[in-house]
Length: 420
Ligand code: SF4
Image 1 (cartoon, rainbow, N blue to C red):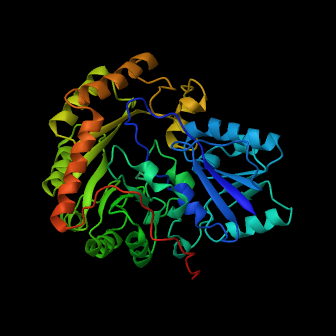
Image 2 (tube, rainbow, N blue to C red):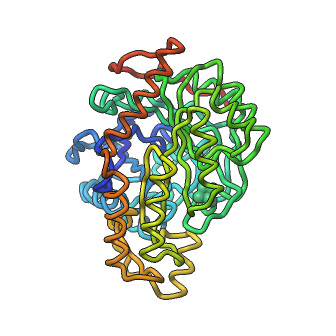
Image 3 (cartoon, protein in one colour):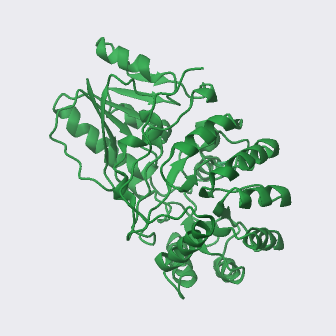
């Protein structure tokens, strides 16, 4: 049986650099596919997609809302030729009803320990329209290592520089931030993977540079410390979303190879200023993630915020406009207030205003979003600033003997993990 796994392309923000990171959802999903299935993979961001082939089954993995229209179009083309299509991933979970109209089956939730039964159903001619495991989470001991061997790794280098591989150490999040769908998708409980399984996976990735894509590592101090202590001997260099702003944890993170972190900048407070300082004092770079268009944002505030970001010397900044994704708390609020302009999902990129802001027109917020990118990167482009961060990691690697130039590489071979 041949299953073709497709990761559809999405419209990149025009201000983002052109490189692509290897996708994470597909490689995690691929690890759950029984080994007697011949699995091929196409990441449409970096590979041409052949829509005229005839696999037995097409699986579409989609993460983002703005990816869904393309995902549905791909499915329609295959299904018009009688080739069945199954959907999975965050995008399908958020857009469950619409996706059903373009699918022979929709898999909702996390696939570990479950997808073998789906393949058995398919082979027996009894594929279900929906497999609903939302909020029914598998044991985290069943997770990983991801099957990175499906990736054509060399396609993810950029200008001769080896980019990061993506990996995760936990799922779920115990917070419930207003713009975020994670509590709907992954639950309100932090679900760490056993540290030894994470370390085993990290050690097996044939790339010294990693992006730990967990929603937030700042969820459980004891686990975070144990993880960083266990990571240090690997000498990997890594990026992550926030880590706990605590002296001991920050020291451990730096020793474990933390290279830079994403830090939400929600205001111009001393608290944020000092948090960034504490990271930078330890040699950890900071990329700010900034959402523009909150209800208390007016033009002056947004301009002051951009000044603040430059003043605190962020290495990088990623601006988005508030976007009411399905199943996020902000969506419910804006719906109640009748402030959502449309549901043209391909425009739900974070770079286009799709709602009515409280203190300005949508057009004004759009202008300020462009202003923020322009002003922050007026002295150097994002590519140049990113290049500086890569120079820092190269220096760290040269210092501890782990540096090697970009090359064509794959991981050390994927093995089916033992079921415990
Ligand atoms: S924004 Fe981050 S910390 Fe907040 S709910 Fe989402 S994943 Fe959790």
